[in-house]
Length: 171
Image (cartoon, rainbow, N blue to C red; front, side):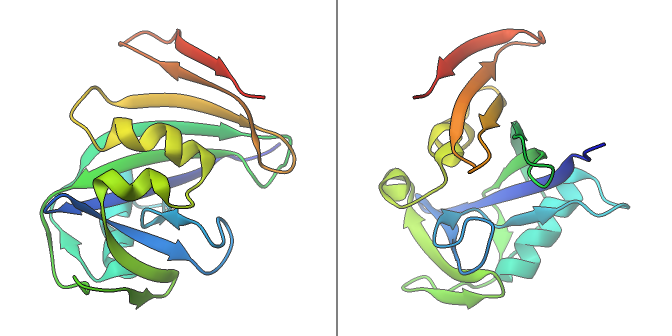
């Protein structure tokens, strides 16, 4: 039986910019992503998001708001994810404001929020980023991947009901 991997992403926002990580290893090698990682056995999703933000960026946040819940499925046993996405506007610490800074996972940079979708980012991130960075309801979706990890379909859920709110097939 395939086990789902529980993980978090945490976007730190300051002055109209968001802190992103340019990955130097898999998954998402060469792409820009939010800091994040796998939830440990004794952690809640929020605790994991705050820990990963600290470990990967040196920023400390006392709180972060849940902004998305993403399910990713594929025919591969190693690619079954449940991802909790958080945003914090109150992270303390210093990450180079003017230029890239190294992290254990890659290179960090503050990017204007309006420029994020112009960067090489994962397909799913391009879909959910505008939703999770805003103030609307929590974004909930399921992304279906092929064995090469390309999105073949996705559906967004809305309201409090467990029904499809929006469905978009990708070619």
